[in-house]
Image 1: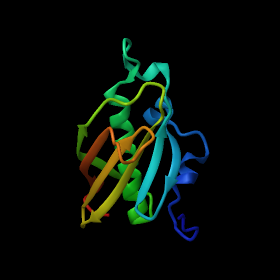
Image 2 (image 1 turned 90 degrees about the horizontal axis):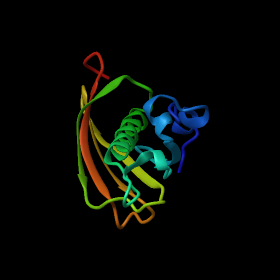
Image 3 (image 1 turned 30 degrees about the vertical axis):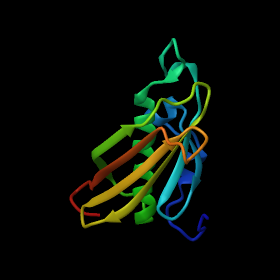
Length: 145
């Protein structure tokens, strides 16, 4: 699905060492299209929020989805442009299964002069059984794209 003539390629972003918060969490590239990306959050004991059940905490999943939807904006713009999360709502439908990698798919479905609209979902193996849905907006840094 990847168009090699595009200016922005998320595989290159993740090709080296992905730093920051996402890198610390272990977020990695999974797949992408013209306006969507899938990132993976491999299960790790450091991400557990409930020791008794082994379930990943909600914070790393939110970070995964914020990153995925943000990259969706860059794909839609076909450029690495500064933007900030204005609003990101996450609805948790169920806990992630212990031991499973969480896949986060984010897409940008509309861009105005200064706002990008995004949505996405997270699952742990079956996209038809999501564990969370997100919807949000990003604003262009400096006012306009």
